[in-house]
Length: 219
Image (cartoon, rainbow, N blue to C red; front, side):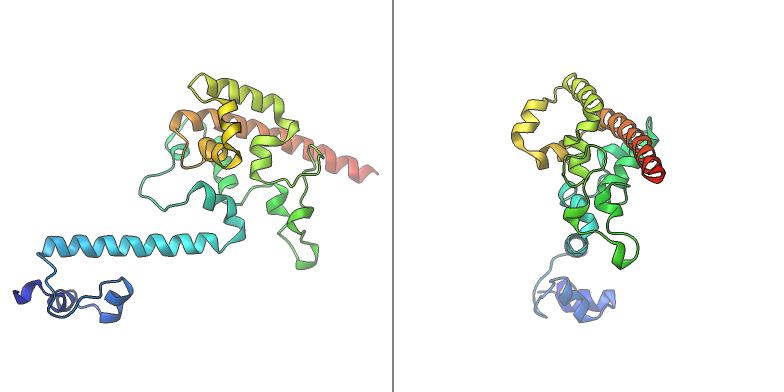
């Protein structure tokens, strides 16, 4: 075996401490053949990519506010999500980003903010738009809140035109449906339709919420 193709030589050429290689899982013996430079570079690149993806997934799962994001984006990937590629509805794109990343005005997010003594338990963050007793999280907002039925019905009619069946999504469950609408299973055409729903629903919620706050203040 030529010395230029050994693990030791590759490590010395890169001038990187051995513990870094060990952390990447490059645990070669000093005399093991690692191929030519191109093969070695590709191997290191893949190992770094695996490590970055693993660390990213661990970080996402460790943050409660990213619970929905972890479902919608199970892998880091190299391609942008479909909803980010369209330029027609920037407000809708912005609102979907907020929903995905736990930065919306839904009570699932607002209930965890503020001083510790004013924060709500998850089960207490109920929807104040439909008042049906459900927690106002992203799934409730997207799929179930009765206050947006008229907007949601139009969304499903538009989605039907591009071959997405509401009944089929319902049969496969909320997780599948959320991914089909704003997750890794969504297409550009799908997200352009969903953006319209999200933008209108957020606007409707804001008006309803403002009226609710005003009415509470008058009591």
